Length: 364
Image (tube, rainbow, N blue to C red):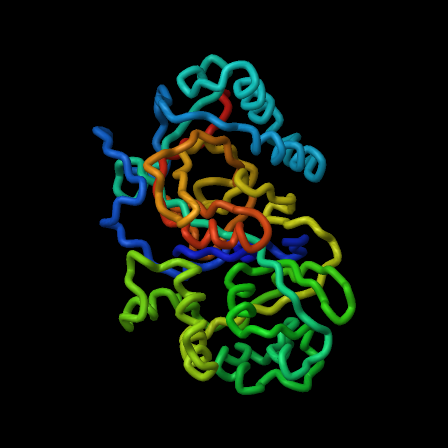
């Protein structure tokens, strides 16, 4: 999980020494909702469908891919060696031409993702790296503990049991925050940055493991209870609801998700995905490795949202790299990493939109 490493609002920043994976969905996307879906006269039957030509009239922006590619070259010589032919061909194409219709002239083949509707509309959700202010010692305000991984016989305690003190006084507390919801969101993201206010220390809390209980989306629970409308569900909607509740009510909601994530401190300041490579916001995605192996390059019409999280009616053609995974990211679903901090969290929280996607491979 960076996926587990960041916060995903659909369906996880420092170095994650454990597998960074994108988070599980906080909300539910109505498949009948047209958040950027495009009509097509093609019908696809597979997740990946070879196509002779890629036709896209969307504006192009490949700049962030260059930054991500530089990080790959710096941190993973083995991956570059395995994919060197593809990476060189894609970089040459992007620099010299960039027209998707000319990919074959650079020895690049494309396979279009079919989308859940079979018409090429692939779901994009978002995740990010939270930044939290915490303290080493608990006090009247900073009283909500973040835990390191316990040694459990069988499954570890459930969330409700942990909130009730099942892990207290075992030396597992690695910091204390002032918000139970912020702790929960850090878990959903799978990892994030923390600043120790009582020590001035900056660290990355990486994913260390989970308690083995099943995951339940609190967004789904709020929808089912009629607390938030399905069409309004987002990270901001959850936060807004939580601000109006007392602690007991919020805790009861969070306890509906039995799953609990544990962390370990890391002083490295890179956000690392499952592939072991620092993630570049806007250029890295979590995907289902059964179809898109780590290090894969994809061409995508990425949906564009305004400041309020509303789809603008536009897509931008971008090059992205698959560098992360996540338990909720399966088949025709991609989780786009948005970066670090509050604004990245807002942007990721609104993301539940569709775009067309092509996996790029060499012509060999």
